[in-house]
Structures are given as structure tokens and as C-alpha cells.
Length: 388
Ligand code: PSV
Ligand code: MN
Image (tube, rainbow, N blue to C red):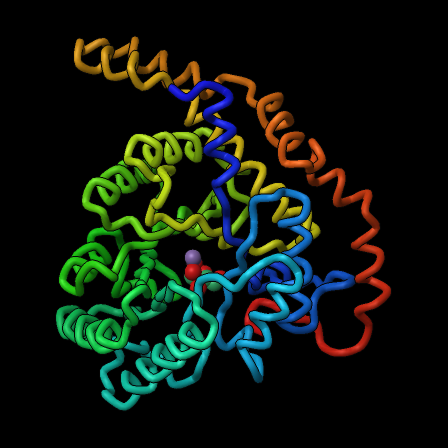
């Protein structure tokens, strides 16, 4: 069990990456509601992300999505980030928004389309080389809608072959993070539907391939913390994409739908060494803010994650082990629930005071006038959106 002082030390070095696309407009397939002051390009997205870091002290890195964040010069973009006190993070590939990908990308039946998708992944690696970014995140919308549409096992072979090509080009310090999702946009079969499929491909590829767990990508009722514990034990948990969901891949604010689940995940992360110095686990948000203001929503996400981490750190491990070894079912459960039910708000206030930031990051941001400033300044041009 960490003492409050030890918990604060862990939280001081714990950081979360925010996604560039969270700052742009997004919506459902029914409507995208534009918001005043939304960034018009990747440079402005970084400026908003820097605000999240300024008020939370915990979001120094920004994930890119290519081609949504395509720019002339990525080293110039990296320099811009540096000037704002943040840095470029995970490069997310996009092989799902081109007409050619209607029947898939790296699993497509046509070798020419597969080659085009692999070329895009090489392009992402080049951006990483230019900017010093370490992680390439792969999520494939590949799958089928009807039984008989394609061979499920042939698609696995094509996937393995394409992944192998990209893996072979990874630099010494680079990693490939393979994300899974059980359905959508395909509804009959998905080529990387679950952690087991991702894990099997990553094992075959080698140590630089790891699994990315997006918390919104499971069937209802799935025990995500079990997956986390399993992958940590196997040293194959590379990253999280955090968000929360009531129904499917809702991409809502992490910790909003089920804070207890987020705590349970963080408890297993802690038990598996995921908060240790030098952990290979990256903590990234993957959310869209369709009706709520975007910068405050990212700030709320960061503080929700910190709250869950703080509670997880307060679990009394020694007493828990004792109860578990003794077969004390309710005793073990009591210890975990006791930590979950602890009010950590004072601890987080103290943490922020020690970091020289306001106790309530969202209120401090709201009071800063930044929203008004960007609404006045960012006129003209096209607002960025999910997919742009
Ligand atoms: C897919 O639903 C996903 O979770 C992947 O990470 C994508 O790259 C991201 O969403 C885009 O929003
Ligand atoms: Mn994701």
C-alpha cells in the first residue's frame, strides 16, 4: 500500500497522452455540431493540447492521426509542440477512410490494396523517424459483413504477412501497438476482434509488437481488468486507449460511465507493475467530444484517470495478499473496496499544490479566458473535425 506521500510521487511521474482528434469537431453519423474556436489545423490542435497540459501538469504528449494531421513538415510541427511545452506522441495510422478500403486494407483480397495500406504504414514510420516518436498504433477496420464474403483464415494470413513487413522496418526503439475492436464498421467478422488475436500476432512478430487495449472495444460485461492482468504478466501490454462507454464504442469521457471499472483496471495495472519507473505501458486518451466543450473535457478525463490511479495506489497489497492466501473472500474484497471508497480529492489537491497548479484544473482553465480568445481569433478557414 502506498502512503499518501508515495501515491503523490507516483502521480507526479504519471502522464497521459491526449489525442489530436479530441480537439476537433466530431459527432455521430446523424450530426456533427461545430463549436466556436475549434482548431483549423494540427498546429492549433497542439495549442489546445498544451492548455490541457498547463492546467493538469499531466498531459505532455499529443497523439497524431495520419492523414488527419498531415502537414508539410513534421519536424516543424514537433518544434511547434516543443515551443508550447508539449511533444508529439503516438502516430495513429488510418487505413479506413479511403474508397479503396471498402473490403479492407491489410487483409483486403487484392494484393494491390494491401500494398497501398502497407505503404501508408511505412509513411507513418517515416513520420516517426523524422520526429523521434516511438510508437505506431495500428487499428484496422478490416472485416466482413456476410458469411462467405471472404475466407476468415486467408484474411488472417494476409494480416500476418502485412504486419511482418511493417515490423521488419521498425527502428531499434520503435514499437508497433496492435489495437483490437470486436465490431464496427464490420458486423459479421472483424480481423482483429479481440485481445487474443492481437496477442497472438504480437507474439509471432516479436518483442517490439505489443497490444493496445482500448477500453471501449469490448462486448458488454467483458472483464477488461483480467485482460490487463494477463497482458502485463505476458509483458505484452503496450498501451491503453482510454474512454468510456454505455453501449458500444461510445468514446465518452474516461471514468464517466463506470468509474469503478476504471479503478479495477488501475488496480490490476498497479499489481502488474504498470506504474513502475520505466514501464512500457503508455496511457493515451481516445475520445471524441460531440456535445461538451473539448478542452475542459480532456482536462476532466485526465483528472478522472488520476483519481482512479490514486485509489488504486491506496490498495493495501500486503493485507490483500494475506487475505487471498488465507482464502478470505470477503476480507480481500473489503480491502479493494476500502481503497475504492476512499475520498482522494484532498490528496489530489495536495499533489497539485506541490506541482504549482490550481487545485481544480477545469475551473482554472474555465476562468482563464482561453475559450473566448480562440473563439475570437480562429475565424475563417475550415474547422478541423474527426476525419480532417
Ligand atoms: C477505432 O475505433 C479507434 O479506437 C482507433 O484507435 C482509431 O484510430 C480511433 O478510434 C480514431 O478515433
Ligand atoms: Mn482507439
